[in-house]
Image (tube, rainbow, N blue to C red; front, side, top):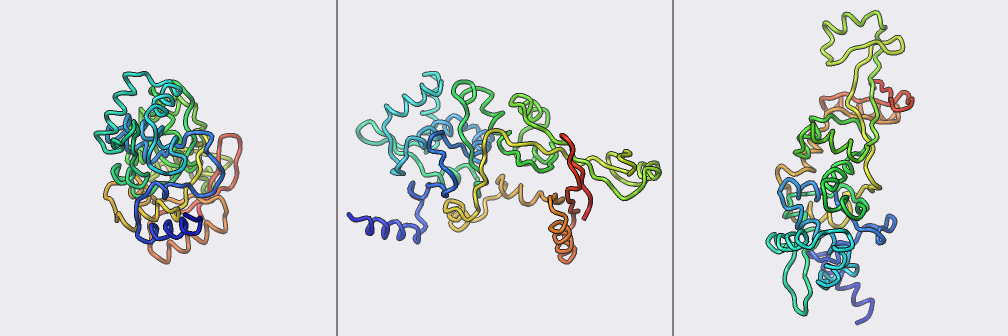
Length: 310
């Protein structure tokens, strides 16, 4: 069959919205083929649903399925698991769980058929994939507790967000979040909102301001805002126009209580680096009667960022 015919068939499948492993190809933003791709949205969902073993087995299988056929040799998969430091008994449990969840399906000649990325996302209740990242190191990073810590830390995006909101999004307790971030040495930045009020107004701000934190900073009344944290590893943002996300949005509809839906609906305060863009966003929110403040970055010193309200 010619390349032209192959292209016609592929385009026909895309028009019909079929979930094929060929649709799992990533957008052309750098190559990650030399390391295993991990999707933090899916990984966190697998932790919440207690199918993390099946998901990790599928992740390794997906790495071997370089041509997108949806079929791999079991021998090669076992060898890769051993190379990643997965113990035999643990690996057997992961594979059994992958068959039970439907991520794996039996095939002929000692092979394994695996579910496409879009279908796995559907089973995990994820309606949009936000980012991808390189796999973790061999050994404990992929098989032990460091797996959960690194997966959680890879969801950080460098923007201010509270532990409470992260708990609502991920289902991970605030204490566990702190332990995970400490485990992978997450870089934290302190965010301070500096008002236009002089420091002499601090007593009144404490009594009537309604802010949780009030203190004098550089001669002004200031308040703490949630810390921001750098992402673990080398994550890349995935466009909502990526083929998989378009399929999830068009063919699957809205999945309630998904991580993506909660993340979008939880945004009440907006932090923008550029002052003009922040002021434009504030005017837009005002015209639409959207509640919430918009802040722009005024300065940055060490691990402290200073913000002002637009």
